[in-house]
Length: 221
Image (cartoon, rainbow, N blue to C red; front, side, top):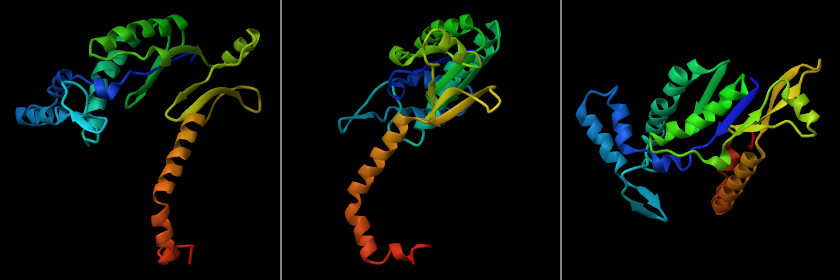
């Protein structure tokens, strides 16, 4: 692939349309009682500043259904559109990858990538979603990206997906190779979360150690 489009949906989990969600579910669920039950769960509200606010959009925070419903929503809003409509009109090869609300698309030709960016905004708008423009871009990536970037006096572009930064590398024989490393941002975030957890549970950890609970674990006898 020569071009990669990485994008982000602005406030996705807070903007999911209840009306569209139930329409999508109705394609597979024939029992209206189940649809009504899901509708009630959707209207359970969104927590903001410690208060629950009822809303006609968004998925309930903490609900076990939230990840599932969000995946179903984007399956109809993006996945099927790309595979059955957009990809067939591309001049070259095109690939699309998504995990929850994180997604990216890879294209052989730049014009296909640019066309995807234009139509993506229109497609998401049909389902009450908006592209976060500050987090959306099209980059040159692949076997020729490093050489082309050096000719311009620049560094080859990188992109981050699912916690890993992907960059153009080489094998020992000099051939192109896709390489990955843990995203510095995600790594730093994980360290901060662990430090906060350790700080909050410091007394409990010390208490467990004093009562010999830790020493009972394998390898600590």
